[in-house]
Image (tube, rainbow, N blue to C red; front, side, top):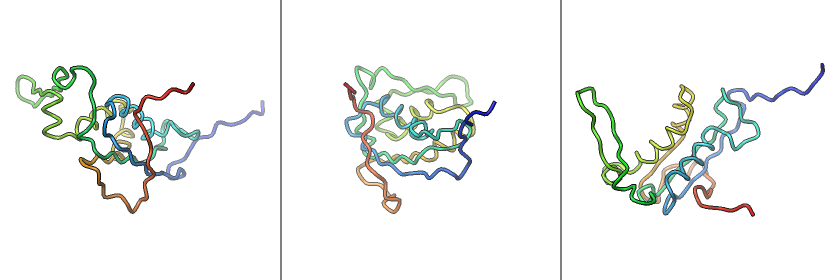
Length: 151
C-alpha cells in the first residue's frame, strides 16, 4: 500500500506574489472571477483548500470597469439596515458614490464563505485612478478579464 502522498501546503510556506491589474475597459464578472481565483491560490499547483495560498492583487482604474447590456440601470444592490424595509441603489449610482465597492462586492461573493475568505479579501487592493501605493512590493502586471481563445 505504498503510494504517493498528496502535497498539502502549510501556512507561511507559500511565497505570495503581488500582481497589478488595470481594470479599464474590463468586464466586471470576468475580471472578478479571475481575481478570486488568484486570491484563493487556485492558479498554483500547490493549492490547498484550508490554507491561504493566494497572491495579492492590486486593481487600478476601477471607475472605468464595464457592465454589459443595461446593467448600469437594471442591476440593483440591496441591503438591510436594521430598520424596516430595504435600502437599494443602482449600479450607476454605486459607481458614482464608491466605484471600488462594485468590484469588491463581486469578488467577495466568488470567494468561499468562511474566515479564510475574509483574509483572502484583505489581499485585494482596489484604487480609483491609475496610481497605487504599493510600488515597494514590485507588483508584476497581469492581464485579467479579457476574452481570450486558446485555439
